[in-house]
Image 1 (cartoon, rainbow, N blue to C red):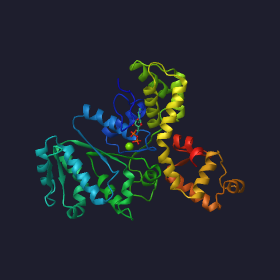
Image 2: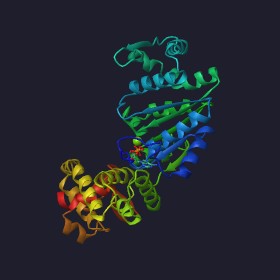
Image 3: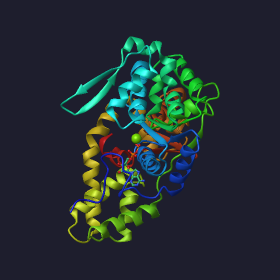
Image 4: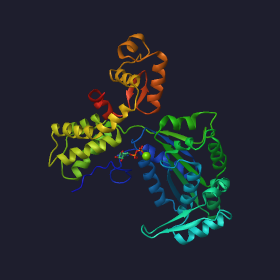
Length: 373
Ligand SMILES: Nc1ncnc2c1ncn2[C@@H]1O[C@H](COP(=O)(O)OP(=O)(O)O)[C@@H](O)[C@H]1O
Ligand SMILES: [Mg+2]
């Protein structure tokens, strides 16, 4: 029997749990034309939530066409426009033969080419890169033109949206996008990304183009009690047994971080033949922990000495990081250094400020920290 836990990619089916309120809010937003922004740290479950909602919309809203674009490796405006145009065209029709017609009729001067990849049995659309920028307006309006011509609606989901800030220094592309997109009547956008501070800056800064673009969902962690129910039921489904206490210990080690809860549950499941023993949870956590060790050693290597010292202070639960006593005992440099380093570590999503304390964002990094720093 296979493990009932999943952590490699997005989950939207059997291993998806909870998120009841967020599911219904996102679904009703997207089907009623409310642009939505989702913000959370990485691996808490944004992409899974969007996948789940859009799968449901596909099933029961036949007039909606769904586009999902990941900007993870899209680093220029040209690449963005090409990906955007291609994804919109592909989502418009299930028939490959219609793509070229659609592409040709919408872009009279752009002359897209169909590239047939016989190995993969896939067809891709390519455009002349130099022409693409000249037709920026046409491309940014493409979903609205197709939707109004064909009588359907588009829901366009863009993952790792914060990458758009790398496209130019003066945010002019951002302004162009917003100015077209806000006039679209048949297109709804769902924009999300894991660099929380960059995403917040894009949508919460009144001088930026995307200010007040839509409903902002701050995705929380799934509650511990929900994780316990989920873990216990998955063990039961696969004819193994775990007590609520041990399930709770899994969620506790993982600090309710979605990806770690699933991963740790998976290792516990693999190590258990019938019934989970307390020592197995500890052993599995060590497995998870040491599998992440090289990654976090690398993280530490990339930090300056004063930044690592600052993490040591955070690790010791120090709150007054700019007080003379803390700065001296941890060798943090000047108050200015400390403020800059706090900012850098928060921007890099290594630490966060909650109330008046600082916390590690990654539960495993925190757990390993004393051993590797
Ligand atoms: N609703 C959920 N129920 C159960 N596990 C989840 C859920 N959402 C996320 N996960 C776990 O977290 C992992 C990362 O989720 P993902 O959606 O890729 O996060 P993000 O897009 O925020 O980085 C998934 O592979 C899965 O293991
Ligand atoms: Mg994601």
